[in-house]
Image (tube, rainbow, N blue to C red):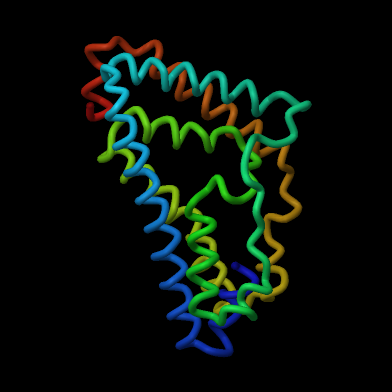
Length: 203
């Protein structure tokens, strides 16, 4: 998407704006619907909020263990890709929506970090309002590289270099970084007294 949509900013500004908005809206919108759906589904389980938070803290530590285990190369996902051929097959508008939809779903593409599943678990246990917030944050974050890359290209960066940015970033390094954050989050939740924990997390 970065290498497909962002370069349009210099050669077809109007189409770039349309495609970027469609991509951003579809990616964020699908993620919001997913988060809300998980939150509504979680209502059927009806777990008490203090218990939900303890579960989230415990799951955070378990997922951190997954990310620091070298033998686990990837976590479960459908592993679909978003090929450039969609852009040529569907056109820039429908192609942008297709890209955004697949990325917004999250589980439909390759999931290299176990921390992703904490978002799903959190939405499931914290309810639809939290699910919407989690989904919106996730979807927007996944779509954000396109406007950032577009700004870089507009400022004079090489589109090819911008499209390849991050490709060489060590997956191992990122997994260790997310594992650290998961441990920090899990520890903060589990060691915080319940009387303080619940109000702080808005439950």
